[in-house]
Image (cartoon, chains in turn orange, cyan):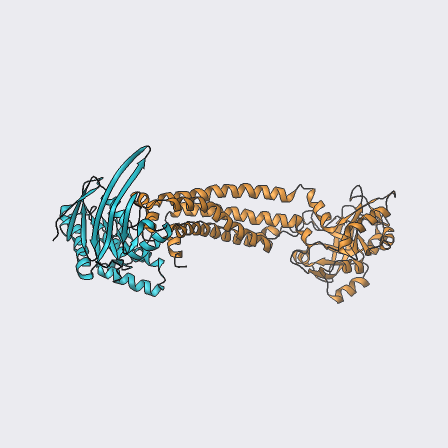
Length: 385
Length: 235
């Protein structure tokens, strides 16, 4: 700690240069924060996917429907605890840009298979007793100012009612929260029995199934058994763990992790050059002063530590400010993206990764100037004062 | 005063020391079989023309460089046998340097510059501050403690340099042309200060200079030319 003042004063030596370098590091870490939030939004669900849940969809495409009768057959397959289903409703509330997911579900089974959805017991009871009832996530409820007892009209882009009307009206009977921070609380869920009875076509057809298995370690075997059960039927199935299913959705946009990593790689390589150049210049300019430090008894190891501490202080400072700004700005960006990217937030692990990255950046950019300082011969360095 | 010296009172013992620099394929013999003894408490001036090896000899005695051959014992330690790390620790304990161009850190105030050698000790912040205040008082610069080098005159900067050199109470003070960058008046003040450190505080001082006016203040003057020492006068 007693060297902190010296390190800090050295950083302030060329204020403009240090400020510009700091600014570039801050911008890089803001970008890191945003890209982490995008990655979280697209593939973050993978980490939260239930290890004991499998998703069954039509083998060729998820837009092809599956018979509702598969449910009973699935429940009989060894290793399956129970199954339930959802269907893509594709509704719009007032304006197409107000996008959020709405799906018809079997309430009891749905809540049982998704323990991450927290619904108060009295609201659950009301939902089971109200055919037109729907539950909505807290985020969407707050977004549109919905409260329990409201009637919400949603126009489907796919499903019309028997009278040809595309607008469905639901009674909001519950507002649910997420068990985990990453739990998506934007969708609205309503009852399948009401939906199936009222829809004009597609009766007895559902979008996809979710299966809860008895033993997560048997997931692969159970998935094979499910697909074997429906082999050579008019609607063959493809069964995979929920995590893989979510990843498959995100993969439609491309390899998100690769894209994000590539952009970050380029950004940080540039920062590496910028900061490395700053540190190299800083050490070169101070050759004589480093000679003085060595002359008065600073060891090579201490000189190396001082230079590395200086570069780390610069990068960690920039990193923390950048991540702090990203953390502050992300919620504002998340608001308009709530429907499209409901899980757009900066995850805690990204903050830790960013902190580690800032230290690593400091060490890498500082190591060569530090070694250069270490190799200085005192007598030579003093001549360059 | 923490002085380490041999039984006969010799602080610096240079025996048949040579120093050769290699420049490309050429060998430059700067010092050749040089012998020197400096007793503790002496104020010695080393004179000689440019390139005569004065600074090289001072660097060797201060442990900043290593001799090509010969034995070099300072404050009871064979410097030619110490590792780099041990040599750095030895310098911190025994040597105070005063440079011609002051070599102060421009980003630190006078008191922070003086404090630098104390950062290598186990002293607390309060103890370090006390030592710094004492050193600045000795050089008469207490009132300029918070000033940055750029706001000090050349003479004041050199006094800060001397305060930094003596703040750890080193065994030996090595001064390389301490008045070389100063006008006569400021130079005289610095020489008065060095003389006072030697006479009143018993500090052993070796001063390199090419200025006869400066060397006149020393108790003994030796002349170095072409790597060889010639006897000087003792006052």
